[in-house]
Amino acid sequence: RERLIPLIDGWKASGARVAIFGIGEHTDQLMRVLPELQQIRLVAFLDSSPEKQGKAYRGITVRAPEWVDGNCDVVLCSSFGHELAQMALVDRMNVKAVPSHISSTVGRL
Image 1 (cartoon, rainbow, N blue to C red):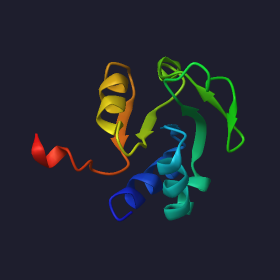
Image 2: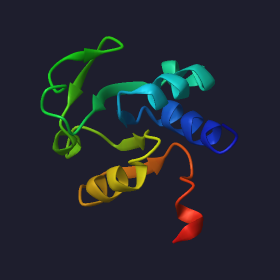
Image 3: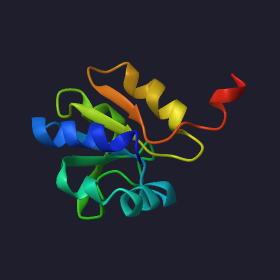
Image 4: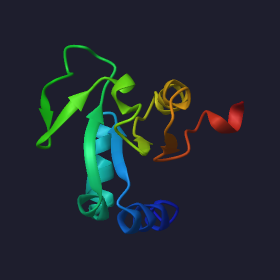
């Protein structure tokens, strides 16, 4: 929370288009812990599963990760087990990827 609040404030001030990668339990927890996310310009949720794409999550369309290129400025990666994979996928696009938390596996790399 302490690490993300200044980033969220910056996104809010700049009007950055933000997408959140992940639509599961971790994202639900993230939204509870950081109600400030309700104040940003949230343009999409992302998910790699084709069966989830095109549906609404929290009232916002779920898109494929590739959608961010040209449509988004920042991707907040939100997953308990797949955050590093999300970041690697988004890193190939013209967008800033931000982890919502530091995965426990990072310390073992």
